[in-house]
Amino acid sequence: SQQGEEDPQALSIQEGENATMNCSYKTSINNLQWYRQNSGRGLVHLILIRSNEREKHSGRLRVTLDTSKKSSSLLITASRAADTASYFCATYSMNTGFQKLVFGTGTRLLVSP
Amino acid sequence: DARVTQTPRDKVTEMGQEVTMRCQPILGHNTVFWYRQTMMQGLELLAYFRNRAPLDDSGMPKDRFSAEMPDATLATLKIQPSEPRDSAVYFCASGFLLAGGTGELFFGEGSRLTVL
Image (cartoon, rainbow over all chains, first blue to last red; front, side):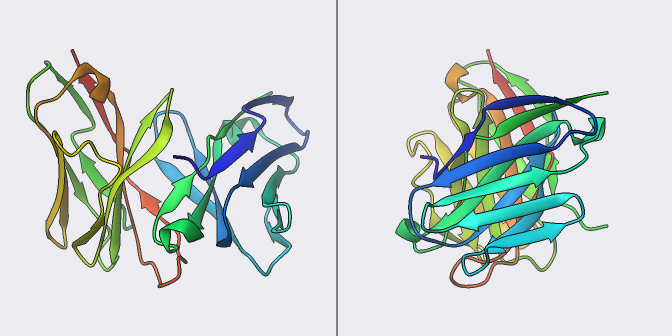
């Protein structure tokens, strides 16, 4: 079963716009990760935010974490056509002893030139 | 440039046949995961190993799936007999994970299985 649910399921924007994806999870976590998957490829790790952090930046990526609401958001600023991909959040959930990395349902992002 | 290598990339087989997928994790990583990805179910965790020992395979159909790690350079996922519902992309991922669940995973490119 999935630990996280992403919202929206699909997002279509123009180059230069910002893209925001949300993730909600169910159990206590110690960190949350975001991954990207290009069509037909494996997942690639983007960023990790720890449970005691509220915000983290990496290049054009900004991640926030609200543990009280069990939610996270990924913001991609000034999007490019090359950002077109699926984005997944992932957590090591407490109910598995923080052993298993479980992925959300993903958001498909389409950035048009 | 270290990477996780999976073979085969594509496999088409007939129902009832045995399928073996192989994975070479990144040297030095202590954890290997097997995931299955379908449109309907998304990414499902099938099994994982820590220091080559199987920790959990509760995500796998036990009667037909088996996962092993005969040595540090090879992880295998076997399906016998295969069924059309096994059609999916199977991913292997490895990472150096610390206790308490910290660490990123590095994914292979996947093995796309089609069972006719």
